[in-house]
Image (cartoon, rainbow, N blue to C red; front, side):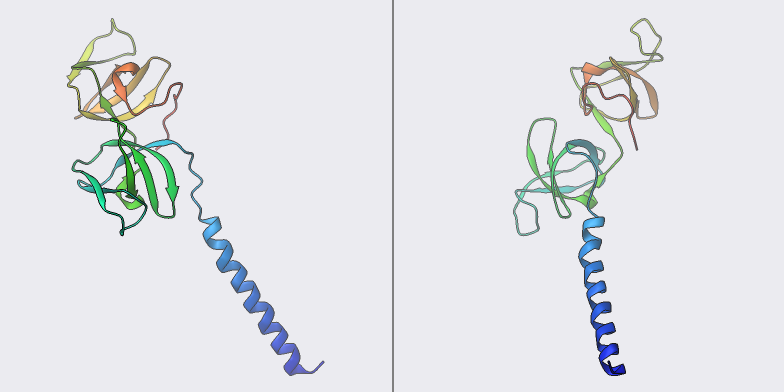
Length: 169
């Protein structure tokens, strides 16, 4: 075998290895997060589209930061979300934060110092307020709403799954 043939073979194998690397990298970067999962809106304004791409029309706009949403599907850099009213649409992943938030339900809720109803009240939080979710036990979740941290009855919030206890940031 001549030196020229050996050099060509080496170049061919190097090019093949580079091609394999380029094909394997996107697969390695694939999102390994579970579906469904709760996240929150990162931006003060997020366009929710009818499909996964800019060519799809805007279905609605979320105009507040920290709104909790549920990711129910993924396509490349797009996430299909569901809001607390059951509306679904697609949003670019850059508009989402992994920070967990919840929405207060059913009128005004009391935040308690400890996870029990005879504990001291810390604050009263109105329906529709978004609070940062810290952790949960079987019946209660610890949240921070506008600087007030306390425990709220689990049934009084939207944005946490039944049986979910440890909240990962």
